[in-house]
Length: 124
Image (cartoon, rainbow, N blue to C red; front, side, top):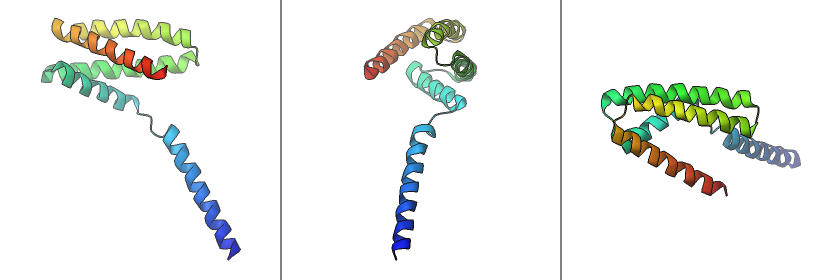
């Protein structure tokens, strides 16, 4: 009986440990999921047309893949990441300017800046 109880306790603790590991590392979105999420947000917030959705989705996928590569190559160097991301964001805005109307681009910049501020305030 003691062996069964000990085995059950070890099993429960192991499952709890595995569940904790899944929460921290297993819930990250893939690059494709992140791009799709951004496109969905932009579709709603900017009222994109069907032809714009296709183009914006391609732009978001390209830039989320590039972003991932930058993060991996920076090896945790925050200054390098910040510098690279600034340039990347400018390139993304230039690409979006070719697809979005002036009003949509202005709205995108305003809402993206607001989201960034909200994210920063949550970290502090």
